[in-house]
Amino acid sequence: MVKLAAQAVKAENPGILRVLGGISPIDPFFIRTLQQHGALDELNTVAVYGFPLDWNNGQINE
Image (tube, rainbow, N blue to C red):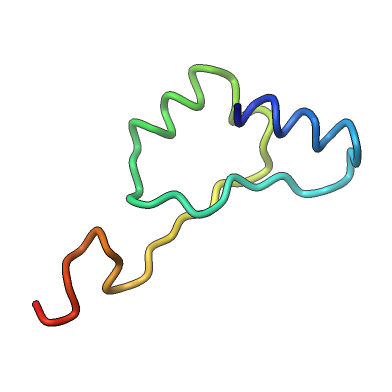
């Protein structure tokens, strides 16, 4: 889906920056899977969501 969406965006506007946005948690295995399927070749960059007190890292009281 990522690969097809990036290709569709590029077809509409070849000069636009194509970003995979906001992955959380930051999962290297997910990124590797995207790479193996050729999806990263269709993107310019990958954004991550790494704010402190993220839902992945526990509750604010901890």
